[in-house]
Image (cartoon, rainbow, N blue to C red):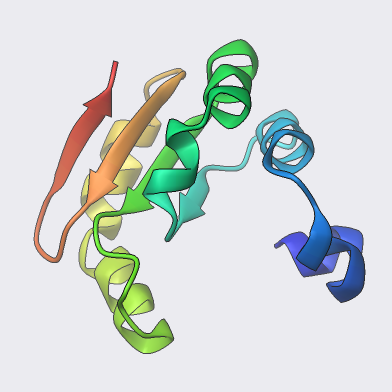
Length: 102
């Protein structure tokens, strides 16, 4: 989504707060492979302030096809939770999701 919205070059250098804010304003769920980046103060505060709905892979070392499969395997679970208003962060595992915050 980021490359489609910002262009490939801009998306590569974009800090987390702007795209988290924009994605949430567009009504998108946030799917990310980088759970650890959400532990930094600025992205975490942005998730809180814009009431983002975040689903982050528990294992950032998965290859692209494995990442996609993890999200697809949990699609029904993610969509069920996504009906709830944010803010929240869920960790996505191979066969389940777990609320990480709050």
